[in-house]
Image 1: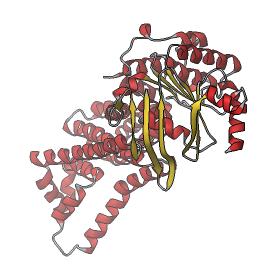
Image 2: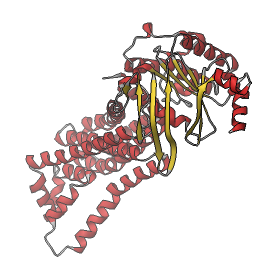
Image 3: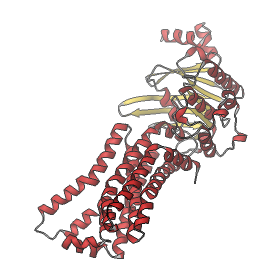
Image 4: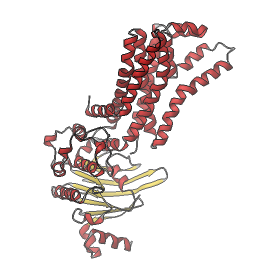
Length: 255
Length: 235
């Protein structure tokens, strides 16, 4: 681990924002598990909160961090270090600290109350979502120069994947409800990392049976070993593509 | 030696550097002057590879800097505004840059650091430092690796008189060792003993670049500020 990664990680972990995030996750998890004795139900309630909070915090925090470190990144660009190494080090540091906050804050309570496959799946998905939205935030902040625009873009990305996308899907489902569109919906859902994570957890619980025909189809398509592999592959593509795009933009960026 | 040929840089429609060609030889200390928005910082950033020129070539010691980053090993840079991560200590900042430069603190040039008394503040967080102390950290970083080329963007802005005197002494000392020094400043009076050449930019054009003695001879004035004002009157 090089020293940029090390010290930037320490710098972020010392900031109150990440600590607050960690505490929030910790308290929410304990709170929800204590509300109900049924841990699967607890995981599902938690899922709805996590799927909103994790992308939001990862996007906004990373964006603000990059813009606030603008002059510092400029100073490092003027040092004898390749830009590729510089941006990957900063990405590694930011995502490492956010993933650590998630694993400590949400991972510990989940593993205490639900030390099984679903609990583990939940933690892995949360960590992957953190990485995905951090890299989207990096891409957004590399292509804009203006802080307000950058944060606006981060909020829009969050709004799009958390709310708008589902709205569009619902609209399609209602409009074309007379047609067999289940497969199309599966394909469209897999373009959204938030949806695909939700489906991944849902189909591994018994609650997928309550979703009727679509639930059964989802389970058949994605519940198998192969399906899980496909979902993880999609999530990893969602990490890699924005990261590579951000690196390529950063190498040519004017400071 | 720095050799710049026909460098152009545009930001959208704004033509910031217009066909600049300059040669700066060893042991020269150059003052880069010009009104606001004349392209001084853009010029420096092109040298540092922070900006990529639209056309033209920049060579340092006969090597083109395009696509390279290792050449920056011989450059020390002090930015106009230094801002560092809030929770990082001075020591961590030094440590990080030392690692990038693959140098140990024991073999680095810590003269300035000692003169500013920064060692006593090593465990302080960057966020708690005053503007002047942050400037001192930036200055120390620029001189730490005994670079062949030292680029200072408004070095004394924000420093108290005593500290800026220390910095000026250090600049003079480095100049006597045969290094290339590039300084931008709006305070002309402080450049008197520091520079041997003056480069004047206006609206992206290089108005003149000549040795200070020649300029003094041409204008009959002695101090840098009087030389510049009398030249600007004749233009």
